[in-house]
Image 1 (cartoon, each protein chain N blue to C red):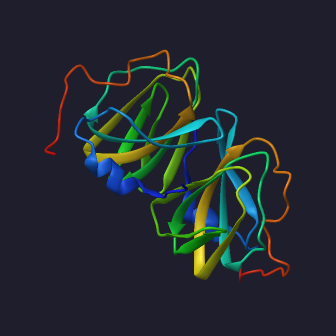
Image 2 (cartoon, each protein chain N blue to C red):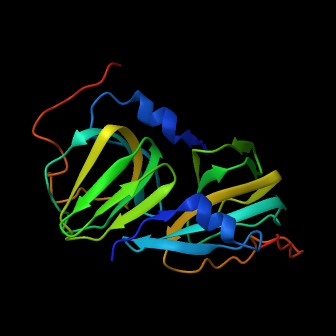
Image 3 (cartoon, helix red, strand yellow):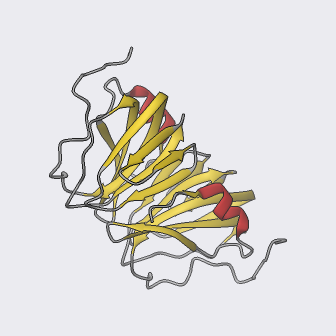
Length: 118
Length: 118
């Protein structure tokens, strides 16, 4: 059955920051929602580009040569191999689009684990 | 240079309804914005799934067995081979995500050509 998903609603259900929840797939791409607050470690993905689309809140993607501030409706493609470190001063919710493989970099999480209220 | 794009702003710049404008690419997927009003012809894409994400407005995806009403933030994957006909009673703006190939079906346009004010 062909079912829609509401990205904001799916993101709101998540309890762990900086983890990803697959909500749909098509053309061998996965559509994943996530919530972020604070920042992750600096990291990079050598095997895939990272496509960010902000749903709610604001997030800054820090790269070595520049920062890009994102607000709802902004889409950013971080090319593979590019070091980056997202930082959300307040909570941000976003969509990630990527291939149906797991990135070789587990770096996209902070050292701490922070779980929101359910 | 890694540049963000704002989907609503890119869609607002378009002048032709039911045409697609590529605004970004990543992982061999294209991110395309479009504006729709009224409906297209019934059609299907045999070579690719169609991933719709509504940015502004509302659009109903009619399929042979059901209709799905979409509002901003709703994502729908129309599987390849599924006949569909989108209808927007008021103008809708949306993102499409697909592979870097042109679909074999040109059917996703109405018989008329309707251009908005620039």
